[in-house]
Length: 176
Image 1 (tube, rainbow, N blue to C red):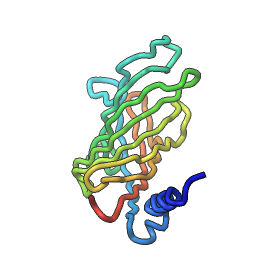
Image 2 (cartoon, rainbow, N blue to C red; image 1 turned 120 degrees about the horizontal axis):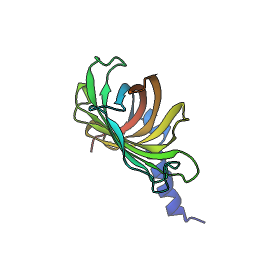
Image 3 (cartoon, rainbow, N blue to C red; image 1 turned 90 degrees about the vertical axis):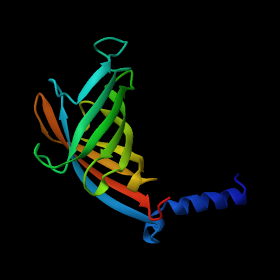
């Protein structure tokens, strides 16, 4: 059983990251919607596998890929560019096409210019209608961020796709 000082420390930590922290004004919540524009093929492809599975063509386990998609304010390809959606993914399941991904949103324009958000999580391809990842950190205006991201397909063609990315981000009110 934990000693009473340990319980006090645990209670203090939980209080810092609770809905009460938001209500007490120690934390800010922000909702963000951006669109990920991805190209699968051609000279301007923005996603690709860089290492195949060592288990052969019928396995995704160990496959590694990278992504460097454009973030835009809207689903239209001519909408304002706000940043990049950069990261990697790896096949992480021996039985199914489940991948682990680590993504960084790099904001290069707009109100979040100069800041980043880091997303992490697993997904099944194809399969997940809405891909949910944790917001595990950030830089600039998103320092010490946490939250959730939801990614869903808006349009898909053989050579390209557009995804809607909704984020709920919590950051400390006091900047460190």
